[in-house]
Image (cartoon, rainbow, N blue to C red; front, side):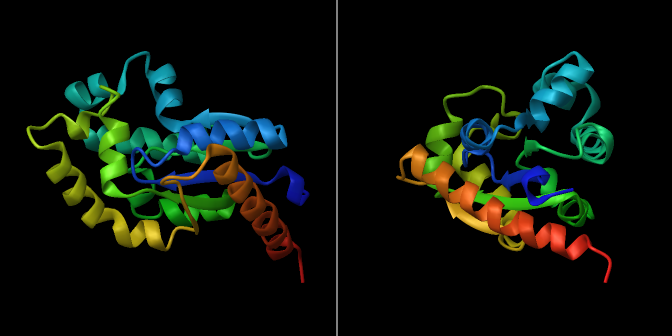
Length: 183
């Protein structure tokens, strides 16, 4: 495997731009983009809110793990990971063993603004979405901060974010390949 083939995993809280940035980076470097949530919906034949309602969040988390373990190509793929995916025990190490991990970050106000546009967020179907966002983020912040290079997505043109993520991926993909060569 060469550095130009190393997968990129975009992680971070919901609404930080993983799918949008992933599309831009995929176009720029010629990779396939897979959104873990969309892929799970496709494989299950039902929407995430339905999965949560019928099977519960723990079952959905098992589906996420299975997707990361075996549900996508090992090379030349960008995976936009669901916001809670990296929080599961062992998933960060699994992602790091498969490619470069970049964590996207936005202010909680930006997250609220972005997520209010979509109704496919079962964890935010509550009376006070901002309180829920604060609670979830507080629970997840530590893992996000140690999951990979952090790229801010607030108030920046998409082209700048895509260029930044691409630079990080190129640099870290070389380190990834070097770390796997026999000594």
